[in-house]
Image 1 (spheres, rainbow, N blue to C red):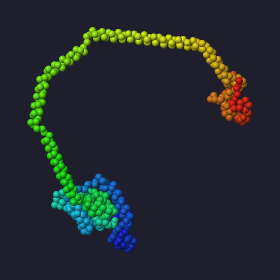
Image 2: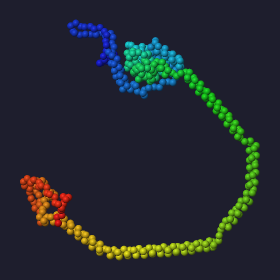
Image 3: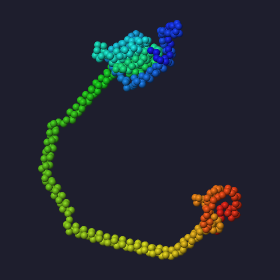
Length: 426
């Protein structure tokens, strides 16, 4: 069905209505104007279906390992069905149900979708067995030939299929929208048959190899158990020999038990004699303790006297040193105080001589602005500004009138001040 905005090439009969200037075209055949427009339409459709979630990986179902019944949706004639049947017969013959459909042209898409839904509608355990896996296949062709498998009805039927579905449309380079909705895409119909069933010969070989390994393991286990049983049997002692050994040990224990009281008494007597030899009379121990105490008292008295003598000598030395230091301090202190007083008087005289008030007494004055900051340049004395002039005997307020005078020429340096600094005012 053409969509709005689609460019097509239509073939048909053109008729007119006389007197009305109307034209009517009866379209007999219609096709898209170019492959680019067709690809754009397919891409838009793919994006829309993908946004609906039809291509989500979570919807994919795993294929059964060994299906009993395989449903095939394809044309009943042609090489596709023959290739699938031949490949299945080679690998692992299975029961195949063919649902014949058109694979191109008008009505092909509806037939393919109906076949997929029809297989899914078969009841389990019915007269017609329900397939375990589906193969939707077609041979190669142009983009227009494969359009039936790009139709939305086919894609939705594949996505809704509860039976795992393999798509095998075209060659390996061909891609249709059913490939995105199917559970597995095969590049060719033959490859679809290979993915549907394993190789029977390989399975038989694997089973035979596993059986051989199991038989070998069982035989080795049996031999190992037989060998361990033989070792265990040989390790069991002779009952008569065991009884004789027990009787011999019993006689030995009885003989030892008869001599045990005498031996124990002799051992205890020897221990008591040893302990008696170690014991001493209390008077001897008291006398020894008194002697040790007297010795310790004498040593303690000597140590105390020695420590007192050492401390007394140290105190006498410190007292002598302190007395000598006091005498030296008494001798030096008057001279030190006189020197410090003389230096303080000298510094006071210098401070008094450098005071700006001494300069004011010589006829100079200090001019300050309203903030109390000195005015050091004529350019700072603006006309109308209120200033304060400080003389040696007091202050007075003035107001600047007229324009400021031009700056005075820079005075020449005096020979005595090569560095340009002011000389002493004293």
